[in-house]
Length: 461
Ligand code: HAM
Image (cartoon, rainbow, N blue to C red; front, side, top):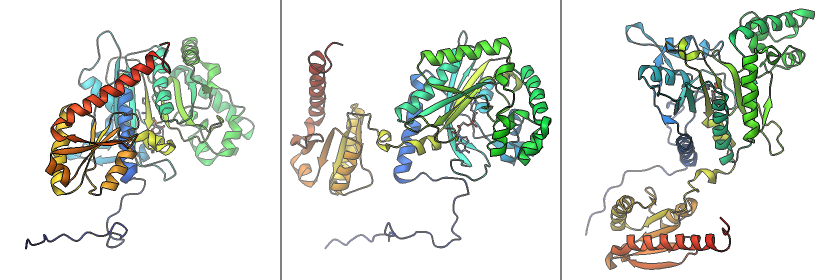
């Protein structure tokens, strides 16, 4: 009698695995991506990369840890307290990047990436770290899909970035509205701030502001405009607007940007209070806010934000280089995707799923998986479940076109069962002929589609 192998005890799925409250848990403001959520998030990242490629952005991957100096000059206002800063060797101060933009610029300069005769379009997807106040939609580690156009001063660059984000959200069926404003240049902002401060000092308005705005008044006047406190929102209603203080060049740039958005049919809201919390912007700034089906604002927690920053590259040690960029927050985006099927690879219509039953079939199916993958088929397999029912459920969930089923009997007969997932029809195919049979099936589908194109449904193209 063969002896049974001794199995390691495994806790049933419903039983807690942590021994006590002292077992380490994740830090506050951090998130685990597990189970279906992990798969959705992964697909969202893939979607981001697909979009970046589609619009000719080149990938860059920069370190998560950068020098503190890279960020200290160009940070968000009052953001030092949001930094995760670390003292490294030789007392070099380091920082877990709070945004990706500066890292991309550093890499652009350090690796001499400027392209002759055209702007550089760079993108990166990765984590950022901010020691944020704990509240919904604000994580201390979050993921940004970041796109930068370096070396382009034209308003079409803004329009392109807004288009990419607009289409990215549309494809995920997320309704958004673009909030847009212009911050002009440094000189006009200085003049405007003087006017704004004078306004708040008149008629005892200052005393009605929240404590933080009262403290910030001398330090950064623009933050007075984006405070969310009721009293501050009321007070700013009569405040002077920066749009009335823009120099001719900035006004022209902004008008052109809005005209492009009109032509592209992208709705926007001119928001004179949108100032963005970062120090480096000039001219156009914009955010994507989620909206309800009727177009009303769903919340002011932006899904994406960006703008033009024509002085930052020079500030970071490069030659003067006009630039504009955008970052989409992937955690906030995923939270707004209602139909998660959109993130299950549903766009692929040619998936071949291999299901197996029993130990010998398991091994054989792994070989088949590699063989079909090398032959160019879009092949999938459940590497976690041995239950045929669960495997076929997975095939349905990923909308596989065909399932190949391999069991003990098929292995003995040198065959495989091929199941059409739409009709449920099954046929037994000789194992060695499977690639040929799959290709024939593909051609048949193609032919059916072409017939429809020529005749009925798609006629006229
Ligand atoms: P930001 O507005 O700070 O801009 O961030 C962009 C997006 O990242 C936000 O709209 C949000 O979706 C997401 N995000 C930021 N912080 C968090 C957080 N704590 N938790 C969850 N999501 C978050 C920037 O970072 C600029 N660097 C964008 C840019 C690129 N400007 C020019 N180029």
